[in-house]
Image 1 (cartoon, rainbow, N blue to C red):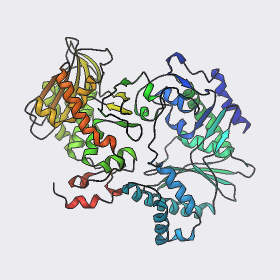
Image 2 (tube, helix red, strand yellow):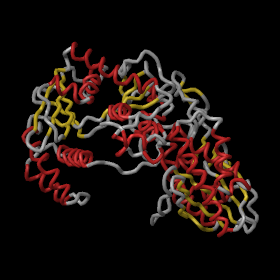
Image 3 (tube, one colour):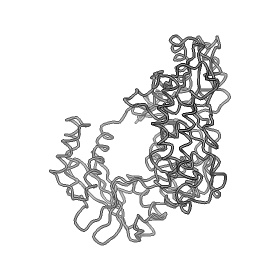
Image 4 (tube, one colour):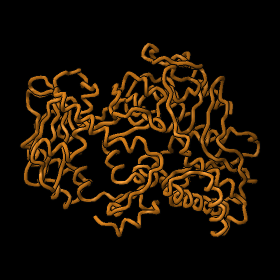
Length: 542
């Protein structure tokens, strides 16, 4: 253990770790900066992405002085609820039979206002966990719950923790269990950072006198799968921690870079961060919703198809089936190949795109045959030429709408400056249907049009802060490609786009029940397994 303490003391080698980077770039913060509480999940996830998000995340008492993320308290922490139920049923004789367990779950779940799909998933997850627990005990012998979410001190103001149950046997074995919503991941050639920290924390939980063996496993709550990710001695756990975890921890706590991305929706300074766009009023909603949320145009379209589908797949993140149809696969492939081509800032040619298609090992011959006409037709409309400056291809734009308390996510297919230095935002759509007849028809068919027009109308000006801009929509079919354009200086157009986004986002913004709307779309819903209403869609009219 002394070796471990010395290794963690290396944190002090960066100087006063309460002073991270250039604090002049920080927003107004309150609370002590010197307390570090690093979890296994932090070490696993925060060494990549936004550095400032990670640096603040491991300082639990440091908060923004002007903004705080809001949480919908009616929505439970799903894995936490499942875990509590499993602990309650450990050793309960009635839980050993399906009927008894079902009665216990009925009584327990009646205390919560849960979306029906969540209830169905929770029942499956509890059954899977209890069954896995029984199987593990057949191998290790009887296990008792030693502790949950242990926190160990590894130096002055330095805490290390893992969100996980820790079990123990009389033979000196401790087992840490990582719970996953879907399936347990197969162990790779290298031990993963979460496992490294979890094993080390388990080695420090007192008493350690009879501790001989540490196991770290993953349990897939969605399917009952189990994978062992570490099985060794406490000494091996310490050695792994020193060599694999400490460098990542040092990187996380000393970071000072801002990189807007997926972490914005969970960041404690998202609402006052200068690195994301200020898009107040983007959604046109007069009040905040139930909690701070994140939304994209695709989210709104998914919600309009079925609120339950959005909630179960995009918010609760339940295990999803791969139900992408041919149109979705085609669109994804075309966008990926064009993004790669545009990143070179060279005009697309039929020959170059054909060669890229041939090198794509992820596509079958049939898929290549399907995609090639779309790529060929794009070459007629490709905007890249000598006088054009490509700013980015498939770039993500993150903004904050303070009025709605929502992180707005937008990912145009291309952003560039034309030969007159005008900002151009281009969206690309593929279709087998009739191409829109004009701009008005295109506006009505694709929410992305109003969304991107509203992006400019809400204040986005691109990295060069351009005041002259237009939106282009390129629609590609197997036989042709056509480009539609809108002048983003047209105030009437901006008002029309804002009204469209306001109307389309209103239901999503105010919803808290996420009721299913069964229909033919149930057939390709990625979370239909969990939805009790999915079968109703089979007999619905188109």
